[in-house]
Length: 230
Length: 230
Image 1 (cartoon, rainbow over the protein chains, first blue to last red):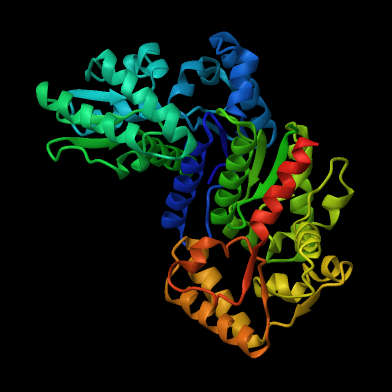
Image 2 (cartoon, rainbow over the protein chains, first blue to last red):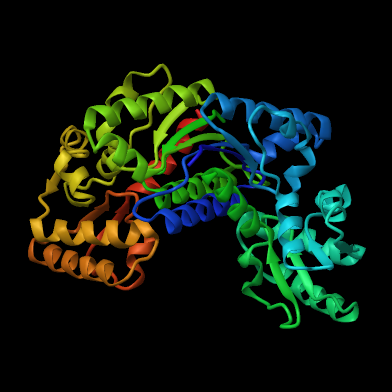
């Protein structure tokens, strides 16, 4: 298997989940004490935001520099352990080593499952920034627009609870609103399009059984491991 | 805070725990979306064992090379996310950037708590290799010798269950034997001296209330974060 260069820490709970899932997947496939051989560049998220002021161009350069350093440390494939981070991944596509994109992996997987319309849950920054748009358009999958109040509820759940690995009432409220919205608009497929929106989110509430849930982190991790094996 | 270079993947569950604890500790201290800025070199444990045959000199060189690569990637402090790994840490003490040792951190903490005698639970490789001996002797703390059958039970719990993140009957049996041994020899302090021996171990059984438990991972992580802050 090739060596993975992972860029993470934005935020750390999703990077922990990636590290665990990547290694579990490799161990299940190869047995014994196997894992993924990887180099991780993990930012201090708060420091990164303070230093860059959230400026896209500066963040894009920071991610590209991290990728270059990981390549020097032996990485042969690059991935980000954050969906929102893909807003700043433009330069990663031009690096010498391949970049495994989360939006492309998700669009390919949903197209394979013949999904035509999906609600994508993510941070305001990722959704309004259009992280998923191009990849899903090219696969002829319609993204149902997320209403403003639901986006606000989601961001509160993500930044106030999930980034602190402490899901509680804000997560439960977000799930309740998602259920109501999907029922009203007959939406059958929901993609968890933010790496913080993992099983943790569903501790205090459940999605309606009419909804098929797709986990971008799981899809991305499987794609990365397949890629490392080729 | 300084940038941490962490060497892990031996095995991956303990590295995941380190990553989580380091970031939780930093976030608790600094607030917001703060975490530890770190570079991780994570081995595929099975591949490393297959390539080196477990040879100490070869493993020592592999760890030293990882430390050098992490320094190039910006690390200012080095640590290992594995107690057993400290058997191969000799060259890390001679690197240009400081190395935060787990055995030294534990011996200092137990001396501070005025512990005079302790049972240390770890892998056969770590315990027989004497990972803790020198650090504890220098602090005048006696290490109670672990009987052979208890060591066997512990290694089965670690390698068959905890390295797969799946604690079950072998962990419960090990705890039962530890309780019996401590009662017989009036041992009041037990150090979890293997990074896999974390709260997971205690899902199916509990230590007697007469025993004070010390967690080497927690002690080590606190020492690392203090070190990054100086």
